[in-house]
Each structure stands twice: as C-alpha cells, then as structure tokens.
Length: 317
Image 1 (cartoon, rainbow, N blue to C red):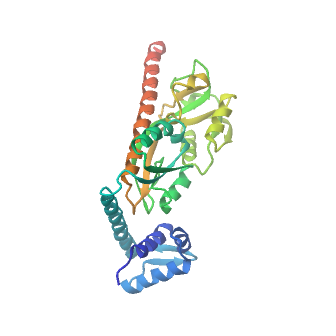
Image 2: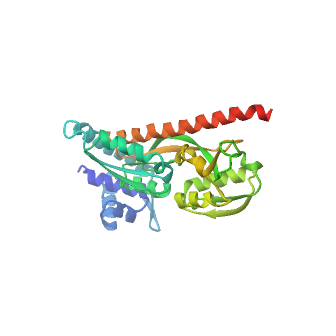
Image 3: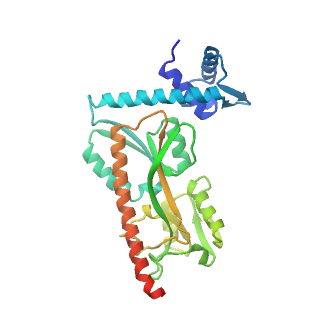
C-alpha cells in the first residue's frame, strides 16, 4: 500500500501539532481518523511513530525519520505544481501573507501598489497580527508565508533572514532629542509603553531593559501600535519601536525618534513558511516588493542616524 498526499499530510500535521486532535482540526478530519491512520502506518512499518501520553503525542526516532521524508515529498509536489503552472496561467493565482504592524504602517501600501500594477491577476489576502498568531497560521497552512521577529526553530517551519532594523526610543517631539542616539540605561526612570506579553518583541525589550539597567518608573501594556503612537504623542510616556514602521518625513511633526545604542538593540526579521510547501512565483514577487520598500525605509533612517551622529561628535569633544 502506498500513501496518498492526504495520508502524508495527516501524519505531518500530527507530527507538527503534537496532537491528533489539533491535526484533525488542521486537516478537516476527525481525531479518531488521524489516530487510526497513524496506527495503520505503525502496523505497516512495524515501528512506533509516536509515544502517547495524556493526549499528547511525541515523535519517536522512527517518527522523526518518516517526517523528514514526508516533508521532502510534499515540498517536491509543491515545487512540481509551481513549475508546471508557468505553462498555464502564469501571472495569476492567490497569495496569502501575514505581516506584523511593524510591516504594515509604512512598508505595505507602496509595495502593494507596485505589486498590483505588475501582477493585476493575482489576488492578495493579507492578515495583520502579532507574531504568535502569524506563526500558527503559517504552520497550519492558512498563510503562504509571514514576516516575524527571528524565532527559535520549530517543526513544520522553514525560515530565512528578511531584514535587520534598528529599535528606537520614540517619545513626544523635542528638538534636542530627535535623531540623537540614546543609551536607555543612562536616562531617568522611564514611563514605558510595551506590547502585550504574547508579542515576541515584548520579551526582547524586557530582556534588554533588565540586562542594561534601564530604570522604569511605570509600565503600560498596549497591543495597538496606532493607539500607542497616539498616546505617546500627547504624553510624557515613551515606547520602543522599530525604525521600519516610522516615516522619517512625517515623524518630526509629532515624535522624537532616537536609535538605541550602547548596546545597539537590533530587530532581526525573518520570513517563515511551511516546511512542506514552496512559496509561489507570485508570492516570491510580493515578498521582493516588500523587501525593496523595507530596505529603502531602513536605509533612509540609517543615513539620518549617521548624519546626526557625525554632527554631534565635534560638540561632544
């Protein structure tokens, strides 16, 4: 008996989700159906693929080996389908993309306009969410890919670098602060707005604060980027945001943006996709449009930070 693609996907879902119930939900099946399928595979191979304990399944070495081969087969099938599509409709299809607010405020609109003009027959579905939600949606196959902060390796996901950008301290506009590099540990106690605990950047910022002796007077949790910016603009609170989500032309009217230094706090962004799939040609083109726009915005900020730093050196001496 040879497995169908459906059979392979059921096993892969069980392996990646570590749960027959979650695998059934992901593949629109039943828990008993997934369990029966795995049991038949084990009988066929004469080896246990999972150990079962209180509703959670853990892959055995045999399960690990079978999973790696299954992923290879699924990626090969996806790559073959993509290759053959160029002989058909070519410039049409669907693209499902996940982006964080970091990528949607400034980067998305110009990239989307250029992409739609170049690929008028491609339908784009865009989901904005924070990284944990996007990661799960990519793993389940609801999204073709997403751009998130660098995360530890996870079964079922493939990732590669997208861009590194500066984390900056953003506060109400003050001419003497704007664009000046800042060492957060040297500031007085800060009133700091942070994203929710489920946000990957929250953990990165808290680690930086604790490791560098940054004094905090009060901390406020807000999971709304636009709400955070509006709040900071009219108060004595500050926040930490990637330069990538700020428009260097409009910022001076409302905010002071200061690159965080000593030590620098970079934000490494990566592209994640399901290990079993291949990003379509249209998806790759959309990703490239995002990358070009992101590099332009990132480059403008880097240039402004460098110019300001050079201008400040003689005075400091």
